[in-house]
Image 1 (cartoon, rainbow, N blue to C red):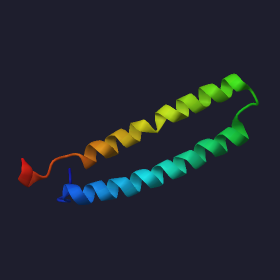
Image 2 (cartoon, rainbow, N blue to C red):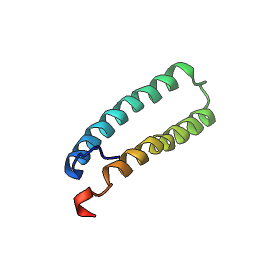
Image 3 (tube, rainbow, N blue to C red):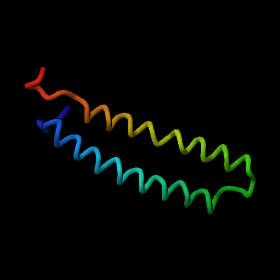
Image 4 (tube, rainbow, N blue to C red):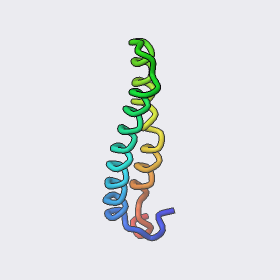
Length: 74
């Protein structure tokens, strides 16, 4: 599922996509925290812990795609 893209280019694409994703994810998390969370320390801690872990799920699949060996290397 590499679409014929060499690993070196996949890593560059993955880096750019991951950085953009992290930037917009952080903005979304902060916006939700400011406008939707109650002013309660326990709720904020639980929210930020959850949000801090959830970004890794889509990043995992992107990094796995970046690490697929090229067809000619196999």
